[in-house]
Length: 331
Image 1: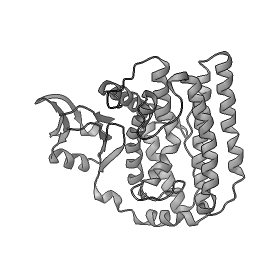
Image 2: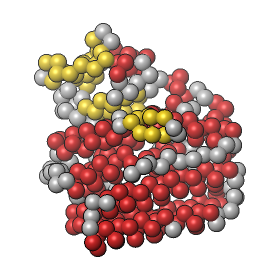
Image 3: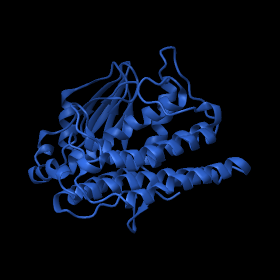
């Protein structure tokens, strides 16, 4: 399980083989280390002991810290996890090889399919013109798959712009579909600095899975800052951004859209941030999705486990020049 701590003034400590949460000097929760996959801290004013940090690292549990909007602040892990040399050497050279274009095409293909599937999923619960519009937009998204097949197998530097253009066109149709589902509650996709409830909830949800994907990238021996589809930029974990693309719709978009579709209240405070109760609601729904078992390659895995499996598959594809198949959910 992933523990999300969002209470100002909370203290996190260690007792025996358990993580303890204290509020106002009283222990309110305890979690055995054997049941924890990760710790996510999303509030200011949270403190934790070095004994706890050492225990978390010793148990292979990463601590991920974000701000109120879900933007990453820190990731605390063992330095030994960064010691996979062969994979990283291959990764750094990958963009000069035509095989990198095949991997990037698969990433975009998976994202496009998941966008189309999500619109079709919500179309099942609509009637008349809305239903038809969602199906039509899903088909327009799917039509972009044919454009991917036309991209030649050249080094990534020569194909990236075309791939990103295809992704952008599919994204335009996808967010139009979200507008159809949520009507006037969602006008357009906004990233940093957004103050409307839907975009703020999406950004916060992405922040939570961002930490999980970053963890998976490191455990797979990949360099977080050397991507294939996304370009290198100082401070930008482009490999994390590459891997997260195939999971956005299934782990965050679906639960967030469902929150608003069901009429559940999301509040924004005076600073334009999600209220504590709203952050908790979004976090609970996203964590629930991460911990939901799902059929994948003939077996049942939680989505959190599938993220790790895919990170290892991606590392293998880069290191051994093997095919990579992006995750696509079933709706």
